[in-house]
Image 1 (cartoon, rainbow, N blue to C red):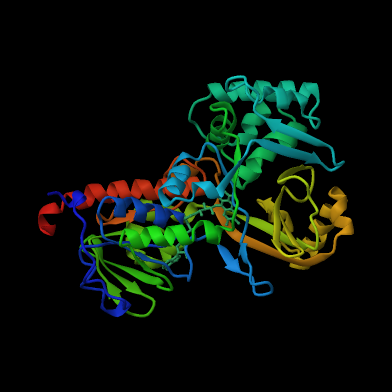
Image 2: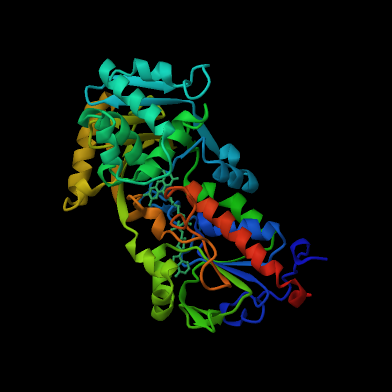
Length: 467
Ligand SMILES: Cc1cc2nc3c(=O)[nH]c(=O)nc-3n(C[C@H](O)[C@H](O)[C@H](O)COP(=O)(O)OP(=O)(O)OC[C@H]3O[C@@H](n4cnc5c(N)ncnc54)[C@H](O)[C@@H]3O)c2cc1C
């Protein structure tokens, strides 16, 4: 019998962090309960591996999570998360957990300019890449000549290779104007990559347009959770982990990864106790990993050292609760406005209607206080959606994640390490590892699955020792 086909009983499992040293020597420890860690844990548990998740916070989901709002007791997402039809690994992850029905595809996208005119984007019966051509030709916010320029740009993008020069240079060389950049290329890329076109490399810009708009009829469809993220990654996930005997340790922060003889020897927790396992998956943000590893190990290996070169970009979300609905549409993409996406979250309590406005690559708000950002966004919402002007704003909250995602700058993939690290029993997962995807939930899940694949290869070699 191979180890892969064998379920290891957890009868020796301890409930106390101080004494699970012995219990975990044949286990795989996943550090971090964000989507990357959860994807790795589910893939490993499905293959009969004994998995322990160590998560510093009191909740799962990492950056894709909710918090309990003290004012209302409601679960509030730190920021609205959306996926797209092209996020196939994320869709697999949702199916695995049994939460796919909590995701609602949006077959129509709504675009609004500051004069409140609206365009709709939906698929026609034509095959890809022409399925959006009808909506594109009808878009009110681009002139016919601009549409021609963009169509030419898209055709050139399809033919390009895998190089990664600055995208802005490419746009300049391919007949694009400041207005086509602002109203088309930038509009899509800022929300997809959380970065402005001037700082983006061609590789991920191309990926967004090919995967999202040109390759498949459903690739562009935005998918919105019907529930807060804390619910999406909640009951079913916990039940799945329990069913598969995954040992979940919340409020268990890892302080240090101790390395001896070129591999991980043990993990030191913040409470001072230590843990050993067969293999380790570090699924924490890259700056956290750098803090956990010994400085000399970081210096010795480019895969760790080069992580310092990754840059990050902020996202601001403005949460508004009104006493009545202010929006008839499920979402609106704003063009030429301070806000970028407006999400209608509907009634969340009696007489409370929740709207979220998201601004990616939100560096323009630096130096502004939360009240100023709120005032700016509320004024814009009141102007764009007349029902908001007559509704009462019950509460508002501004949240900025300063290092929301890494920036897909030109050449960024040179600094993203593969999931097999230079230490043979340490594996890496996280949206920042080499996945071929930008920093997204899809990228995080892919990284977790890839890390699990590497772990299975590694632990497979140790089968005789485990019998
Ligand atoms: C504001 C915002 C909006 C976003 N919007 C979208 C979107 O619309 N669509 C999309 O696809 N993506 C979006 N993203 C990106 C997406 O959230 C991330 O790409 C993804 O969640 C990253 O998952 P991860 O597991 O790699 O990392 P994380 O989610 O960061 O998970 C890491 C986990 O490790 C834990 N941890 C850290 N240190 C320790 C330690 N010492 N010991 C133990 N555990 C530790 C953390 O608590 C966390 O749970 C957004 C991100 C932000 C911040």
